[in-house]
Length: 591
Figure (cartoon, rainbow, N blue to C red):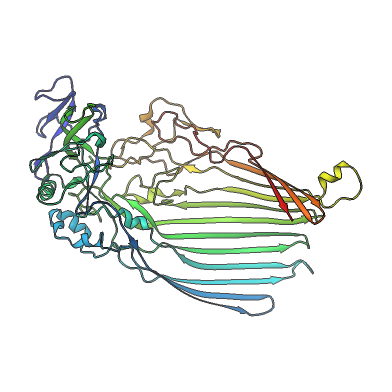
């Protein structure tokens, strides 16, 4: 077996090594019967299983200035067909230009002649001159209808409202910001050291203790290396192209990025019960399309390395470990025929607009006034949100990257922000002016008590493993079974392990876990606030004293628990999503 024309080396542990070794590691050629052709964990040596470095080329810093233009055109008309019926309709057109770097920092790299040093990357760029193609067909029609009638008698108006519209979003600036990691302006490598290139040796160690001489570390930084341009850089690139091309890491959007959009539709019925009370109920839904997501079609960046040399204390006065070696591709084979796959290139972090979502809800409200003293509103929402991914960046509850970039359908599940039940209320009671005598009158005159509250069911979350079970280079693997995990119903500890054999919860190596995304839920959230407002009047002047008590019941509303299977404290909530009780006093003088 060869690695881009060079012998692929591997390693094994053992009590004795026939050809020597360091720290109980044997270095074996592929023909050796003792070879282990799968990723090796070298964490026991104090060495990371991969090291990712960004090299700035021809630039002293990594600053970028992004720009895009937004053109929006909108026309709308309302037609009152009768006294009880009105129609509104409109059309909106939106065009957002592709995001670009105003100095061409990103765009110029796509035609740089030095790109020939990494032909696999050049093939991936595919001759583009900008980050992604313009999307110019973003037409958004809108239509609405409203009909009213006194169905239950005079002063009891019934109102029907319905609407539909297409709404567009814009591509995040992060798509361009992260795509700065494009060769040759920026060169990103994932390796656990490099043994030799053009009489230069790069050792990976704690950058804070790495010598500044040679230009490899930017003074004043902890984790940034700077590789000088020129002949040294060219020798380095040739070495990488010949032996280490699959250590080259790239972040790019797909050439075609459709603008994220959503179909929004609603039907709402409102009924006035009398002059003081009204109710409403309606269906509200949204279907998101072309939503932004991250995938790794070339497998992930958590690659294991083949240790060729492990040593201590050569450069560092504090004896920090360093290592040099070759990158070792994930054990999972790539299908060269899969779209977006570049088998001899390293990790490709790809932005694409292939995700979707669906939101359906029943929304109800009750408004009322009682004895001209009590005003209240109560609402209840029953909803469900399913999607493929809930954001471009990791949110509490689930990773952004899929478990398997080649099986995106398996990512369909409850959104990170899905809430099945939500109740909210607000209430104000005014005691009004009082007559009569007594000390109590001075405290109740125009006294106001207000309270608001909200309750909703817990946030969904995913249980992941810290092991790359499906061997795709991403640490996003899910469980294969929930047998061995107890759902406790305790908000402070939603999950509890009932087995000590954690491996029994995981899929066989090389396969995906069968348990879906966001299968579990954190504890519910309940919060109530109370305000007391008392005015004191002195002729034409007034003094207002106000007391606000937040989280009046002092309830601990826990967030997502520790959700990594092998982590200490698994299943236990370690943080809250709302503060504890707080009391605030304020005094206002009006004159």
